[in-house]
Image (tube, rainbow, N blue to C red; front, side, top):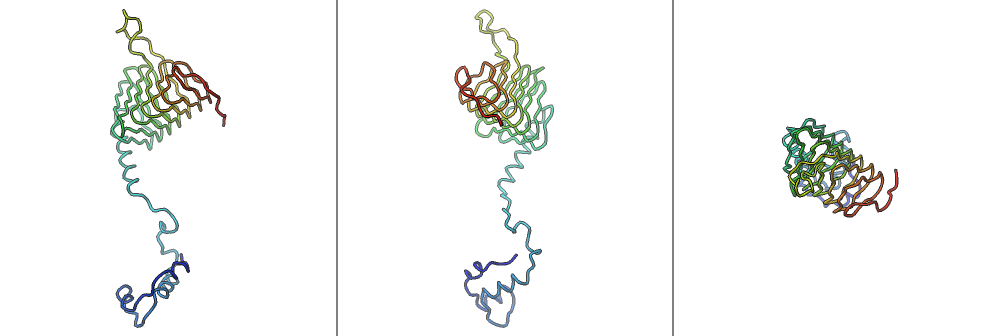
Length: 238
């Protein structure tokens, strides 16, 4: 590593007294340019720290936040059935596991703006695939089975329930209805405040617009939106 001519020419002259204070006695007056040239010639590149060779220095604030997120995953997901490596939790989610709860590798849970709620009821299974992001304020409840595939983006305040918890008939309003599994395939994007109800399958690569209520299946590689959600257009297949 050498000091460029531009760097050297831009430096002011160094007085002899300054040179003695900084580098020891010189015995003569030496300009700042000459001294830096001498230092650059004498110092081999191997002695220069690796991080200074054109590489970005680590952001200690990011490292600290990442460490807290890893520790948060260990604490808040301590009752989960299985937690993959490099899972991160930001904030304080509400996690209740009375059945089976599985988190794949590199799952990221955001709960620092509004609390994220994850519940697996007795006999229920909640599974989140690798690389999936669950945003703040969401609520996912599995009475039977809710599966979210890999590399999915689940927007803020999204709700998924595989059971309605009450029947619609007035005389049977407090009866528990049957559950219907929810299947979210890989690489699905659900916008903010999407509601996914029981028995729904959302196909791979699809996208659901913000504020939609999904009561029917969404085919793969389509964009659906509305209340109830319907297919608006097809998406390109990679």
